[in-house]
Amino acid sequence: MNRGVVVTGGAHGIGKQICSAFINAGDRVCFIDTDEKRSLDIVNQTPGLFYFNGDVADPADLKNFIEFALDKLKRIDILVNNACRGNKGILSGLTYEEFDNTLSIGLKAPYELSRLCKDELKKNRGRIINIASSRAFQSEPDTEAYASAKGGIVALTHALAISLGPEVLVNCIAPGWINVTEQEKFSREDVAAIPAGKVGTPKDISKMVAFLCDQDFITGETITVDGGMNKRMIYHGDWNWHFKPNS
Ligand code: NAD
Image 1 (cartoon, rainbow, N blue to C red):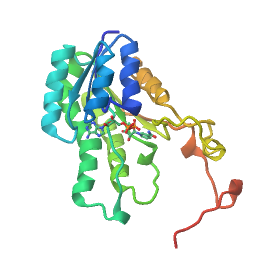
Image 2 (tube, rainbow, N blue to C red):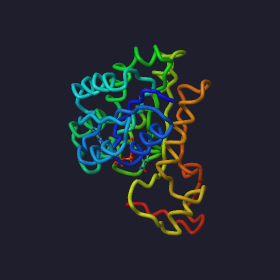
Image 3 (tube, rainbow, N blue to C red):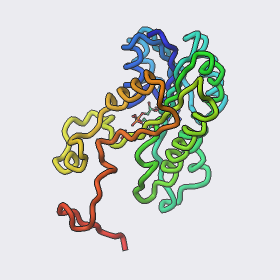
């Protein structure tokens, strides 16, 4: 389709698949990632794909990345804020600086990139797609930093949708368990815990990205793509499931 697409965290997992899906659709893609080796391996085999070596937690890298992307792509139609990293929380004594770093990667970078791309996206009636997590809505213990970044990006999505519409539509995807490893088989129990009957794949997410980029009547929304995992209500004793409190 010859759109200019900017992606964060494109060297591995979901971001890598998102880049590949846009390339297969005939678009030109530029991504930023800290993993130089993996990134160069992919870029060297993929015409139309460009790589910028940088850390999304560093605002100077973000500015240079967008300048680089505009030089390579000549236009920006789509921004996909994908990069994030898990981090611990209050039970393991996560420090202020560590908490802040997770927010820098998962929340401040999506804001800053939206700001840097705003004029291009408005001019081209573009799209912003943010990647959150089902952990924006439910938690395990000791996950405060990641949950906060993901809750924040859900709110950032509707705020940006109101500020940048009608020219730019802004939506968010909240993935559940997506297999980004080499593992091919999962236990019967793991699979059975997911109502759709499988662990998700990066393609399940890239298909939703493509859908959200091709439609023009959804904005400000977060769409959960988790095989229904968060929809199952379980009480202690149901399905032979037993809750073991820590104390
Ligand atoms: P991944 O670890 O497989 O890949 C992430 C990529 O981002 C890597 O290439 C990494 O080098 C890059 N990256 C990380 N920090 C960076 C930084 N500061 N600057 C630049 N690049 C950076 O991760 P994934 O599982 O594909 O996750 C992608 C997105 O999906 C993340 O936002 C994640 O929170 C979200 N998500 C994943 C799952 C899952 O089960 N895999 C579930 C819910 C949400």
